[in-house]
Image (cartoon, rainbow, N blue to C red):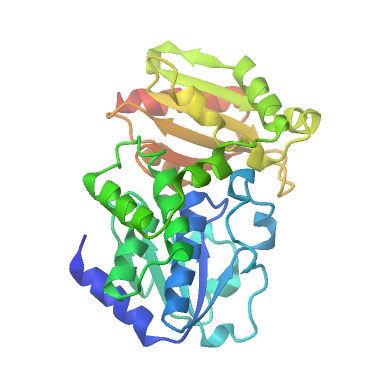
Length: 327
Ligand SMILES: [Mn+2]
């Protein structure tokens, strides 16, 4: 990890007293884990840090129910003018739809691991070979001499574990295992974390997954395994968007798949004419973040997402072309 960038970011964090911490839209385990972990680090330094997520980001996905997110607020504090804004795990400032945070000459710190991060901060710590933003926050805690307690270590472990697909994806490095070991030494209750996140599923989630499984489509020519979920699927199974989390992983796991895709209707923002698309690449030749950027989204080589207003048929045609161009 670039020691200079790390030291510079540590200086920035040490040098200010009041912060607002936030992360990207549709926050995942790394977004929430690095948010909570950084909050704990700043609190240990005696700083005043508030965590912010826009109101329309709630409810958060079910698997995060055991994370202590009660202090995450949807109100911008009245003293925002005095706060340094820290974006965690956010590759692009447009993935934060709250204009108030981007304007007004605020000092912005950008801590992230997306390789296509647009360096939108006044200071950017972008470590593309870190498995997760949580891993970067761990190194910042070290640089700041903050002793890890379980309240810091557990969310960082969740960020690391989820972004590596439970230590399974290509970004799982010796370093990510070393960091995980340090977090477990700091008191993470590993079986409890996995139970909280992956067991005790509401039955409705399986009903939604069942809909997705029955609609599997295979395009052998480009190794595309795709499914779609429509508004009726969510309504009839009484599910919410967050219940679709993880569905795409079943499709990425199908044999001879280069790209697994979930194309799902959007419920929360009233934009019923568009789909949210999640792509997962399992073929080294395919970089789905390139495809996502073509559609105005972003992400990683192996996991990316975006919105589209195309019909399902039109979208599938375009997706096949984009995948074919990389094979
Ligand atoms: Mn991440």
